[in-house]
Image 1 (tube, rainbow, N blue to C red):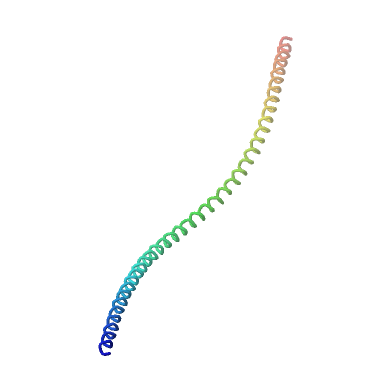
Image 2: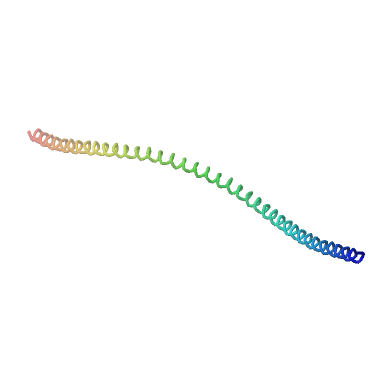
Length: 138
C-alpha cells in the first residue's frame, strides 16, 4: 500500500506540476492578450487625439466658412441694393431721355418758328426797302 500511496503521491505531484505549467502557459497567454489590448488602447488613444485635432481643424474651417457665408450674404444684400439703385437710375435715365426728346421737339418747333419769323422779317425788310426806295424816288 505504501507503494501505491507513493505512486499516488507521485501522480498527484505530476498532475499538480502539469497543471501549474498549463496555468503558467495560460497566464502568459493572458498577459500577451493584455499587452495586445494595452497596445490597441494606446493606438486608439493616439487615433482619438488625431481625431480631436481634426475636429478642431474642422471647427476652425466651419468658423471660417460661416464668416465667408456672412460675407457672401452681405455681398448679396449689397448687390440687391445696387440692383435697385440701378433700376432707379435706369428709370431716371428713361425719364430724362423722354424729357430730352420732348425738349428736342420743342427746340425744333422754336427753331422752325424762328426761321419762319426770320423769313417773314426778311420779307418785311425787303418790302420796307422797296417802299423806302419808292418814297425816296418821289
